[in-house]
Image (cartoon, rainbow, N blue to C red):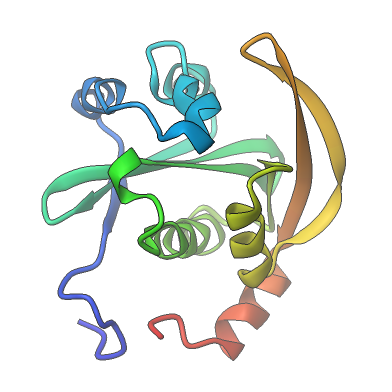
Length: 175
């Protein structure tokens, strides 16, 4: 174990398996500030949407043997993918999103050979926006999409491989 990690154990990213889907679909709802994200966890949510797409990597995240999150890297063009993350409701606000995002980005760039990872984030999700900025993502624009029959404003953010490498070289990830 890396001596820089303060936690006793770190979340483990592994490929999502069919049995994980039922567990994720049974997770409790998010707290009120994130309740518009509940759809992502349900039967017709992100796993159904992205699970059938070619060139998509979906990871389950375990911590102490418990499924606590999943992430998605969905190819959008050669060498590029969109990133998504969903944490179990009781894991929000514990710093796990940062660790899991860093691990997923590393897999995308180092194992999948991606040259660029991008994402959309709700404009009202300040915590996530600030995390992504600290990890090197930059603002590329805005868009409005219909989610659950509601117009939803998003920021477009982007992380090229070179920016990720600069971040890794200049950071102390375990601190």
